Length: 217
Image (tube, rainbow, N blue to C red; front, side):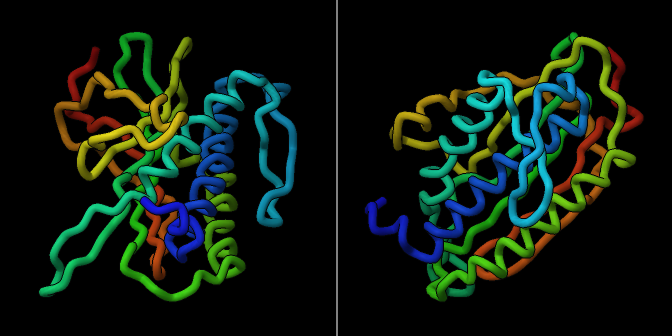
């Protein structure tokens, strides 16, 4: 993609989205209590009090992961819709997945993303941030929707692509590698948290849990 595309409406939207994902993922990990409260510090983002990781390895992992997604979010996948060629970003979903000691997922926070690459109107940054801020507020009160994690659990950030990237698109992008994460055998139980739909950005945030019929490890 041409560097000038970073200044396009879609490029600016992708930048804001990646910045938001870094804060939202940190909020999720804080909410789940994986690390002591002292591993975080309070900051204000989009006029909302949020948690920022103080521990360097935790902060660097989240930052490098989401920043590595930026070129993939900007990269266009074309398709036909109503007789015209439209386009979406290469990244379809970003997930924060928590695993038990058998490396089986027990809970997933899913961000489903869609940036309309055909939109030519300018992005109103204030309006976009106002909408994304509501996700952070909703996350802060969503603990009752989630489940308690098992002891010694681990977590990771996983991205789902609409098609496999063919070439490297940057240093941070090289940090993304194929995963062998175990999958549930039955469709998951989905719990919506928040969604937005506007041009050029649509985001859905929801929880996934294994179904009651899922075989126990």
